[in-house]
Length: 386
Ligand SMILES: [Fe+2]
Image 1 (tube, rainbow, N blue to C red):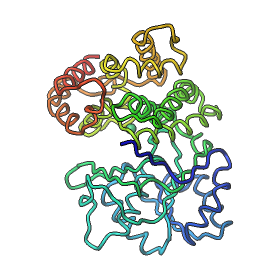
Image 2: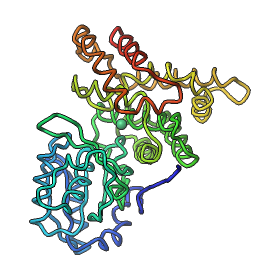
Image 3: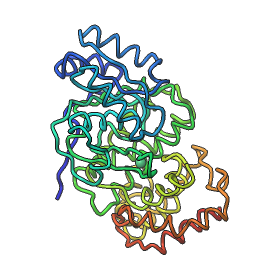
Image 4: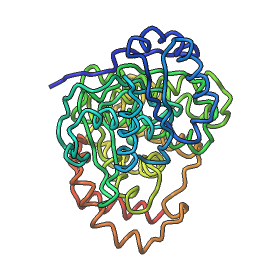
């Protein structure tokens, strides 16, 4: 099946919010703004409020998203949403406020007593409030996806909610909102987006349409992430990264992630390494391992980035591409697991569980090369030896 979903409206560029005004106004008389306490005080949210006032759209700001979203934050958000009598939801910030906006939208229409965990693993298809997504980082792709991840505070389980109704109705891609991202966030989110695009393109679930977005995203990120990392004021680099993160989000929304995300999540859960950073730590080694199952696909990615040419064999171009990816990871100063402070013995003890969890997530199974639990264990061993 090659069903393809994407936000109904996407506005890109420094005037995106202004240009989207008539659509936003059409979503209701009152907006419920979901954000974090820091972004809440930023010129971005001040500008959004001013713009809503000009549109004669009232608003309520819920700024209690203080990190990766939890069930408790969402319950509070739903209560505030209902009390505010808002008609639609605007998520503004990094991936967490955007994911929270989706979860609040879903839970706001459920019967009293419903729990977020009731929806885990199910396809949600409710009529929910319209969602506007305004990312201020370039990486998670939440502005383009039908997914949201909410942590169950009682069990520490990361609950994945999904459904086409969760794809934002409108995405605002204004690179100016990303200019203040610190270097470490630029690196982690940008490499997350690169991982999304590479994994989606080399996944078994890739489609003709996701290929278009995947090739484009990889080409932009390989060229512009080093520039955005080295000079955060490079507006062209920031602009290209905002577009690329969206493209990569479209990719994961419609195909899938593979071995890197599969193996990265357990490291995040057990050693609290931020998502983009743990992906980046794994990227080179995992791609090296997976390459011989899909030389042709990796070579396609290499050729759009200027590695090799049509004369050279796919295997050679694929390997060259992976070396280039490693260079970008190095430019972004991503530490190894041990440089990050993870104890070798503690990590080795957890390898069997991490490999099991990685396989259970289903993501490694999307890799074109057949991956076993033992392969994951070996890769974890290599990674902690560096
Ligand atoms: Fe990711």
